[in-house]
Structures are given as C-alpha cells and as structure tokens.
Image (cartoon, rainbow, N blue to C red):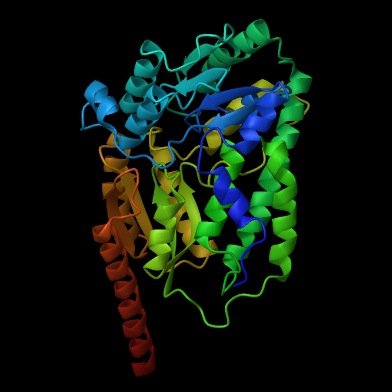
Length: 402
C-alpha cells in the first residue's frame, strides 16, 4: 500500500515523551499532566489550560538504577518509567497523576516521588495516587468521584487556577469525543476483508492521541481518515492470518510490527494504550453532573484485569470473542509484560477458556517491555500462524468430504 502521508510525522512524535507537540503546548503556557493508567480519567486532565501525557519510556535501554530500587522481578514498564524519570525525562511535567492499581506501579510512583524526578522549580507541582475501586457499582462511582475531586480537580484549581466546573468538564468531554470518533472511524477500515490500514499504522495513530495534546493532532487525523477512504489495499494480501491482541500495556509499536512481520495482521487492539477501551465516546446527559457520569463511564467500560468481580471477568472474555468476530480475526494473542501479577492469572485463564469454550485459536505469551529483538517471540507467532493455516486446511477438507 502507499505510505500514509502523516505516518512518519506521527512516528517521530513517539520517539520522545517530551515531543515537539508537547513542547509547543508548553510554550503556549499550558500544563502537561502525566498519568499512567486508564483508571485515571484522561478527559479530566484535558481541561482548558491543560493536556494529558500518558507516560512512556521510548527507546529504553538499561534499567539498572530502577532495578536497584525495585528489583529485577518487577514489571519492566514500571521500572522503565522510573529509569526515565531518574534520567530527567519527565521534568517537563506539571503534575503526576498515578493510580493505586498494581504493586509495581505503586512502587514505581513512590520511588519517583521520593527520589525527586520532578522539576523543583515548579512550585505548583503535585503528586496524586488515586485509590481506584475494584468494581463498578454506585458506591465505587461515589468513591472515585471523591478521589478525583480531592486529588486532581482541587489541586488543579488551587495550584494553577484551572477551571474545574461542570461546564469545563463537559467541554473537555466534547473534545475527547472528537478524537474518539476519528480513531473509531479509522479503526473500522480494519474490518475489511483486505484492510487498508495495518495494525502497526493504527497503533501509531492511537498512541499519538495518548501522548500528544489532542487539539494539535486532530487535523492530521482528519486528513488521514480522508486518505484511508480512497487508499487502495495491496492486490495480494501480505498477511496469512488476522489476530486480535489482548493483554497488558503495549506502548511499543515495534511489538505490533514484529507480530505482523510474522504473518499475523493485528486487526483489533484490546490492551492498555490501545483503542479498546479508551477511544470510545463518553455520552453525557443533563440529568446528572458531568464528573459523576465520567467516573461511572470509566468504571463500567474498563476491561482492566484488576476488576475481578465475576461479571467483569465474563465481560472481558465475551468482549475478546466479540472483537474476534466483528473484525473477522482467525485467532487471539494474549500477551503480558513479564512479572505482571494481574495478567499472569488472566492470561492463563483466558487463553484456556477462549480455546475450549469459544473455539478461538489462542496464543499465550509473556514478553519484555521492549520486544523488538525477540527471536523467540517471532518464532512463536510464526508457529501460531502456521497452526491457524493447518486448521483452515483441515476444516476445508472436512467440508469437501461431507
């Protein structure tokens, strides 16, 4: 296929947490608010005068210092963020909004605060560690609302003078929804028999909306959507199977590239930093205040494995199967970063259930934070693709016999 006009532009933005658009927004006097998790509602970090930056550590190399503070048996994502913070990579931030979701991120954020990775010259800087509920009932909604009011909105208003009114939140939701509509429409091209956008390209675009000021990428996203409407697919398919990738945090597009180079086109991304969930519109009504509705939306739509109530577990399984059906996938790849406590349980359970109860071919893998050079991972994906092809051949023969 012809290269997307703005793909290189978006790729360059992902090479540094403090990228060109972040620096542009900072030069305009806006606040950069870092966060790490879906449970921190990003829409509340995009009020007028602010923009959210979901933290990454691109081009991570050694993590020796972070490993000293956190041990080598902890999540590499958390360690990579700590290492980057200690290198001074997050001093551009004006606040850090963490979430009490897992022990590794808790420890990483605690070390960042204790070791002083923020800029001491920023007198209004504040740290936050939300106590996020483990389910989605109305008591949980009320608890999250109180946490966000006290730990995010109050210091934003008192330290920086940010308007945190109901009207301001509704305005931020409108801007958020525009990005969601664009990403959803772009993602729908993956449902085609021969998709006109690759999983790697889609992941690049989606990631950019998490780590850049949204208003500064929206125009190029619009242009990309129009470009895709007339983009011609390759005459001959370059993939041998379609897969849904489900699992823990992926902010490294090279992992998606590795999977696709192994013959599996990624047509849906149900992982942290992907579009499911995260790039679906938030529908607000006038019957209730916006903050409560935002809290309810995030708790009800999250697919995080931290939510261990039975209905949430079943929802995750059903949703993965639904994605495989809607995006015409041949299989599912369940992945986790090494030492991720929550996903180590979910991956073992779900990979078994998907294969035995939903009859969907499933590959289960664990991986390092940066996977681009993993020959073992490449071999496993290639073998999975071959197993899917063999299954198709056998099914065709059985139909012919009948």
